[in-house]
Image (tube, rainbow, N blue to C red):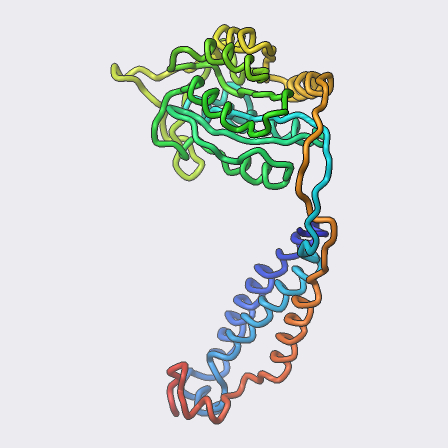
Length: 344
């Protein structure tokens, strides 16, 4: 557990220190060359080490990193207890097929989908959530959990390159989601499918209907536009071309609302257009809030111990080493010649 994550921005000091060091070394070399040549400088200062300035820089960077982590104050849970919670089990099935790269929804369909899920998570209370990614097949990303921070971390890592099999197998996502709900008494089960609706499978609506018999309500969120958009092929963030079909024509991917609406209808849920993030988030949040909550048990840490002192001590220790680490060659190190420094 990290208590004060906001202090991580102070790590920007490290690249600044490195940049200042490089500029200082370049300035010193330029100044020295105006005074004397390299051979004369080595004769005038034979005891000057070429490695220790770099070692001092490394120590400074490590010391700064340690002090920043001390400010963040990592904590370790020391007592695990069982608590009673009331909520809904929600599984998010996110489409990560290549069509989700289309930019007819700004900044892209996949980014819009991730933002909507993230905002929904922000509005949840004592619910449990799970995440599934699917394209040509569905794969589990996060099992049912109350750890929203972990959910956001897994969510941020979703991308269209994570599955080699392409397509949009919504039926596979529903089938996998049914295995996520492990509490027999939990009747408030929700599946939220976020997709552009280009379903390359068959039977998704039928599976959604079957899921309702297990107490699973299926909601769908459409990402994309009826006009559609091209699928960019990017390299290092720069669009080089667009995906083409077998005939060489640029592929246009469009939102298929009918498929998503049918799945939601058969799944005893509802469909919402995800074009406006706030509208989609409020719609799903209201639907969840209107559902009866089921009580369940969850494990959580109730006591934490601060760990900042270890990093503070390490930072101070490194700074003390720097104080006593002069830029002259150390006699015993010079004899060992660990850094292959030339002897005058």
